[in-house]
Length: 213
Ligand code: SF4
Image (cartoon, rainbow, N blue to C red; front, top):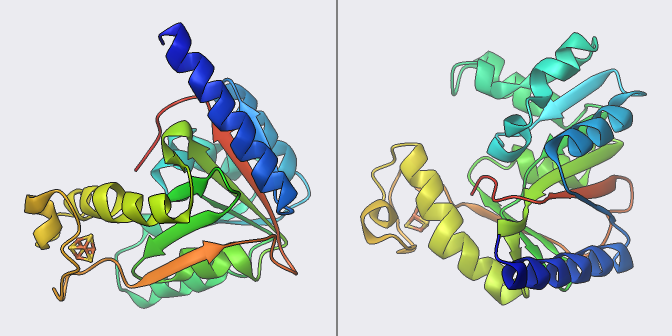
């Protein structure tokens, strides 16, 4: 990476970590994937059950097989057929797990965590239920403030996610949100976590790379 791009990113990451901590969240920056994996496994050590959201970022670390090898019961709905009773039950169990692992759609430099989704299992489990939540995010998820976070949801995360799911929504062709009324609309819930939730401990693990969308 260009030295000035690196210097700028360093300032952005430091400001984000500081703002998140000021809002009561745990926040750590990891230079390598190995360091992040070690951190997650340390957090999982005293947990019997782990819920994993539909996240590319956390899965990119290979965390699911590692947790299973460590004897954890992992609730991973991606292993089940969408919409079946087993898949829905798995999503529910994520909210009751000891640890929940997720990515996020946006992190703000002012210290908020912003997400938009269709089902709500991720936003629910992030804020209430599990004793602790780890949010894995690449530096590409960092934006200046809440307005920029919403713009990111509409211009990047939503259209790319719809594309990956092969949805027939207008954003797939337009490249930006058209606030559609499609039955295939994936954007049904927006969550802004302003401060550490009262009964769940969120820690954000920021990775030194471009990860997920
Ligand atoms: S609301 Fe519709 S058009 Fe907008 S990003 Fe979501 S699925 Fe795409």
